[in-house]
Length: 154
Image 1 (cartoon, rainbow, N blue to C red):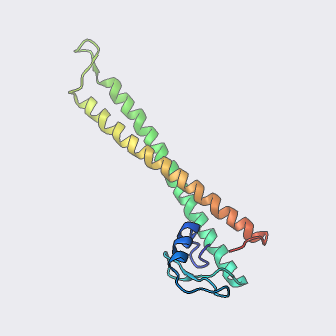
Image 2 (image 1 turned 120 degrees about the vertical axis):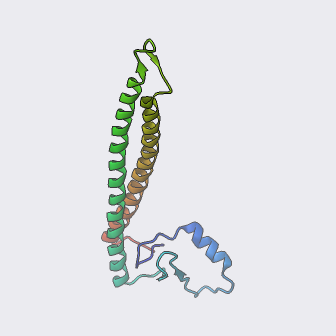
Image 3 (image 1 turned 90 degrees about the horizontal axis):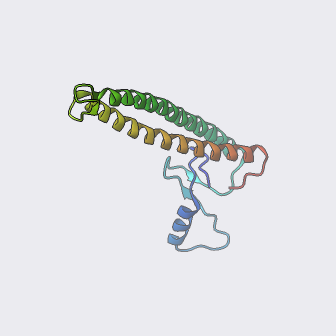
C-alpha cells in the first residue's frame, strides 16, 4: 500500500503486524492505516484525486532517487580519482635511498594509506547510493506505469 500524500510504501510485513494488533473487525470493516512518514491516512480504495496525488508523489520520489543515483555516481568518480592519486603516492614511497624497497615510515606512505582509506569508504558509499537509487527509481517507475495503464490496485 502506498500513501497518496508522500508516496511512502507501507510494506506487507508491516501491514500484517498492524492487522495482528487489531482487536475487533468484521467483514465490512475497512482497514485504514496511518502513514509513518507524513501522518496521513492510507486507505485501500483510492478515488481519482488520491490517485493523482499518488502519481505526483511518485514523480517526486523518482526525482529523489535520481538525485541519489547522481550522488552515488559523483562519489564513485571521486573515489576512483583518489584511488589513482593514492597509487601514485604508493609508488613514491619506494625510495631509492633504501635500494628501491618500500619505506613505510615516510610521509608518502602515510598519504597513501589515508587516501586509500578515504577512497574505500567513498567507494562503499557510492555503491550503496547507486543501488538504493536504482531500486527506488525502478519501484516508482513501475508504480507510475501501473497507474497510467489503470491496473493499479491498492
